[in-house]
Image (cartoon, one colour):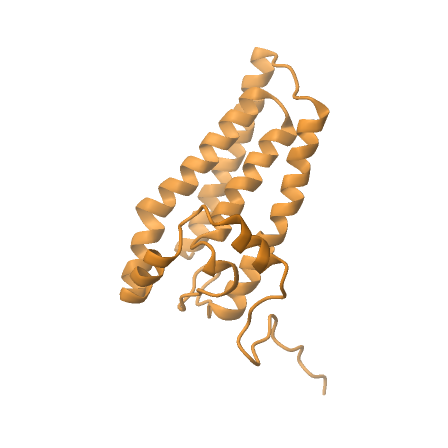
Length: 181
């Protein structure tokens, strides 16, 4: 099993544990639900952040020359990756924060949000950044000096998301369908 797949499984375990822990704490403490409007903000946030999450996956698949599921052999610095180095991780953090709002109780919101952002930030600082420097060397160091890790200029992100994907000439998002014959 690839290390990328192992990381996904560990993260999913954290998701289940943080949601379960939050719901359990809310049940025991009998916390009051957030107002409906705030829960709807959480739902809207989850739906909105889905777009850049999907975009990053498509970009990595199209440009990153995936060697194993979730891993890449090419540094991708175009499109949303010109605004922030880890848009997928940022999107996961925002998605999970919005999920906490949607669930709509204090303990659930706090446990989910803190656990997910601690995972994202800890993983990036302790694992991902080091691996990327090791894998891509000076190219990644230069990219790291130019582009923020997680918190981009919002206008950069909006401009990128309003355009079609920025792919090199002739590059397709998905491989062509096999011809029948």
